[in-house]
Amino acid sequence: MTDKIRRLKSFEFATAVDWAAQEGWNPGFSDADAFFNTDPLGFWGTFDKQGLAAVISAVHYNSDYGFVGFYICRPDRRGEGLGLRLWETVLGEAVAKTIGLDGVVDQQENYRKSGFELAHRNLRFGGVVTAQNPQNDDLFELLINDIAIIDAFEQTCNLFPESRIEFLRGWISAEKHIALALRGPMGLRGYGVIRPCRTGHKVGPLFADNIDDARSLFHALLATRKEQDQPVYLDIPDGNEAARVLVEEHGMQAEFETARMYRGKAPELNLEMTFGITSFELG
Image (cartoon, rainbow, N blue to C red; front, side, top):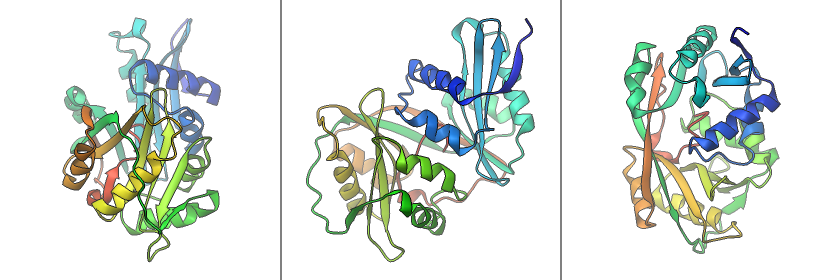
């Protein structure tokens, strides 16, 4: 049987998420549906006689911006050029003017050969953090009806390159995802989401105007967990010194880093308000 490249069906993408867990990426329990529904045409795989052999995602938010992730090859097929053929096929199909990715650092040179340039590093911090009472009267829970306000906040503050209504719909409403915000002039002045993962919880995104607001949101989100003795993870952009203070004052340790790279014009994002990126898989 000749290896065949085609788009994945939703149940096939669930296998890719399991592979990501085996690679130590620690996906959330509801990530598969939230990611896939953002762009059902953006998930690809290579199939051999044993089934799925390699995967990659190239999600398009619109014709201007896309994001590549889930680039994984089944262990027994590594070293054969299988992943590279899938990469070249899918990137050749991509139409977005700008495409981002979060890649492992030692693959930067390979990504550069495909036209990607380094923008900044992202670092994952993790640790056991006990929530404290934030005591902030401006805190409130975000619901599915609030996604237009969330999207407007992100776009006004340059927190994400393009509108992502479809993603937010799935991210806010996913089972056991909890989204909290602080009231502000635009309806909110910051917000964050916490979700259960294969190990512990991840907070992402975490957007705030200053470290005090970020700290209030962080603790309010952590307080929603039933088990306070499990680890929590936060992915911060390198260069946001306030975000570094936030994780270090809670005793969280750096676990690994990624290289945020773009092909095409890099978006001008407000990293000073980004205390936690949404995900390494979809940006």
